[in-house]
Every structure is written in C-alpha cells, then in structure tokens.
Length: 374
Image (cartoon, rainbow, N blue to C red):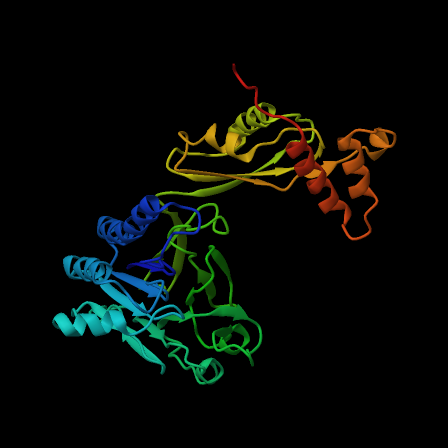
C-alpha cells in the first residue's frame, strides 16, 4: 500500500514579506494549486491515503475560496483517504465550513485531542495498517505517556510538534521521543519542522518530518516536497522516500565581493557563481554579499538586483560585507571628507563595524555620483 505523508502546506499564507501585492496573490494561488497537484500526483502514483500532519492552513481564518478548493480535491479524489490532523496554525474553521455547506466527505478523517485510530487497509488478508493520531492541546505529556498499540500491526502515528528527548514544561507542542520509544511504532509521521528529516526512533521504527510542501521565505531554501511510503502488508516493512515537489524554490547565494570596486564587478561575480547552483527562472534568489571592501567601493543593491530581475521570479540583494577603511590615508587630509572620516574614527560611541557603514554613507553623500548633462 502506498501512502503520502505531508505537512505544513500553510495554505492561504499572506506571502507579502518579499513580494509585491500582485506576486503575493499569485503565490497564494500557487500554494492552493499545489494541493491539487499533490492529489493528482497521489492518484498517478496509486496512493491510497494521504496523511496531513498539521498546518494545512496558515491561519485559523480560512478564506472560502481556499476552503472550497481543498474540499473540491477531497471530493474529486474519492478513492484516496485523507487523514487530517490539525496543527498549531489550524483551527476548526475548515471542518466547520464543510459542515455548513453539506456533509463531511466519507474519505476525510480527522482527529481530536485524544488518541484516535483508523485501520487504513480494512479489507486486507495480511497485517493491518493502523494509523493513530491526536492533536496537542496542552496535553502532549499525557498523550505520549499513555500511547498503546498492538505490536502485531503495522503502526503509524501522526503528531504535530517539535521533537525533543524530554517533555516540554513550557510548551504544549513538544513531541517527547523518549516516551514513544519501544511502543511498537513503525513510522512516526510528524509535522511542524519545515525541512525534511528522517531518523531512527528505536530498533523497530523511524520518525519523519516531510518538511513544508513548498518554501515560502528565504529561511526555507532548498528542496521541498512530501514523503511517499511503500508499506509491505505481508512483512510489515515501510520504505519512506522523499519526493521533491516544489513548483518554485528559494536560494541564498553567498558572494564574496572583497576584490570588487563597484556594482558591475559584483554582477560579474554573481554570474560566475550560477554554475555551482541549480537555478530556474521560476525560482526566487537572494544574493548575500560578504567579504570586506574598500570604503570607496560603489556597491548599489538596486543596480545589482535590477541586473537579474528578468532571470528569476524574485531577486533580492542583502549586503552583509564589511567596510575596510584606511584611516591613516586621511590623517592629514584637510578636506571635508578627511574631517568627516577622522570624526567617525575617533568616536568612542560607534563600534568598528558601524563606523565602516557610516563612512561609506557619508562618502556617498559627499561625492557627486551623477554626471549632469547640459
């Protein structure tokens, strides 16, 4: 039997952190379409069940448009069972909306804040695949402490929270791994962490975060997707496989600009770095400028980003380079520039890194950068 484990889709996210309103709206629509793509892919792969381990939505207030889109896919793929466990971002609004417009689809299964189990292959002549799940509600410690499963079954457990070896006194969403070991769990399907992670739970089972289905910000770079489980009902073996699925990807490229004296040289350095990365015109890219540059170096973030704006979906430039100032060069300089640099250098109220930035800003202000045509 094939099962998909996904989590943290965060549908209906605002997507406004880096994008203008038009692209933010486009990305919101793409996240919703990703759920449709996921369901169609599940159908193509012969998947019988999809486990959604929390944070299907980004907020408790789900728009009618997005709720309808998700409901439509669940109804469309009636041969697939959807097991939806709410995460810390989810509320009851989606299920409430479904009930307000009709009946909950027969292929949609939900959980409560107590342990609930479903036999995922009720017609089998072999081992039963049993899915257990519970939603945290300041009850994580109690839930994991009382978990029980039949050791003869193939046991999958789904939870949404942060993995830890110990109980969380101050946090309600801690998944206490130590209390779940040696309980007959074959696969612990988790949500909450936005990157793929697959590790051994004990001698019998593993625990896994599939990561978010698609990255939304530059803290979610790299490959994103879901986990495809191939469950052998005769032997009880589970083979998990990460499936790269994201429509768009995010990349942060670190560029050392120490030898650069201007934006044009930085642009050439960036171009040279492309061969080391798998980039697509659909992707969002941030160039992180590092190194140490001369105080007179002309580094204009807008010029650099404009050079690549037609090559990627979104381009950002973050200048984290340090500024190297040769203060001795200006020791006897009687110009306004020399006086300004000495004033900054001798200040005890400004740290060295900020001094470099202030010097560069001051020089930019004091130097005429544009040629006036008569």
